[in-house]
Length: 349
Image (cartoon, rainbow, N blue to C red; front, side, top):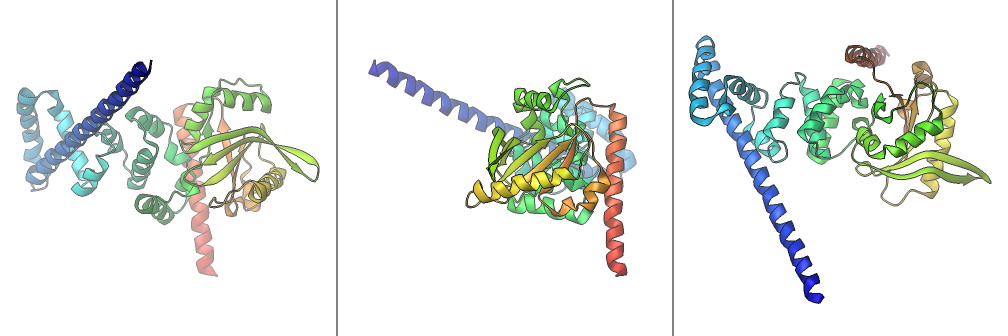
């Protein structure tokens, strides 16, 4: 019997060694392929396109692609060569590409080079590495306009740059890079009429997908957590912990639009957790009030942007993509205009 157990342990250990080695080999191959494609793109870019031979270059690329395809296969088609050229143009620093290629594959880069705005692209690069997204997940996040839904996108450009730089150099993740608005909860399958209890139950039933929408660093702790204050019981809808922010996160679910009274309720929860539940080394708890709609002026007058309380909409039935894009872009424009007006007021004073 002991011999059988030892054999099982041995087999398990050997399996881990083989799997680990295979993963390392796959990573090395992916990295080498990415660096090869960068070198090809950079060479064509330097030798032909940037040396004032651009018109001639358009013809020569086609010819080179045909010859390379005959010898090495379809990976070197004209379309792919143009991607390599674009790749080396967008990412001109070989050292940076070499570092990124350890975690991101060529397929990741083909999604990233399609993003025109550099700050948005940097956002996806950093979050993709932190959360370990597959290529499919990266595409889904881009298609769902994750950047536009993240709080940081509504900040001034300099703030976005600073936050992404801090994340890149110090692994310092700000709350603005974590929290989103709106949250897409279409996977819950809720129809037009449902209660807060239905919403909460649906989230628990689809907890893995809910955490995927929140972000991978969220860890579920409790549902309907009871807290007692002055002999009165209160119940926190959902309690999470965010590993990188090192904070407890309270989620309060509301069916209707945001009401001013929700702030006081959330403050009570947060102060209680800060006093009785927060551990040494943790940061102050954060509250997220999820509503079916937002009253922007209420939120502005309550100065919630200066507190640890976030307010966001949730959407259970997604509109057409065009309508969603228009809504998010309008929201970004309004937010940035507010910051601009505030800055002008400061200068005037």
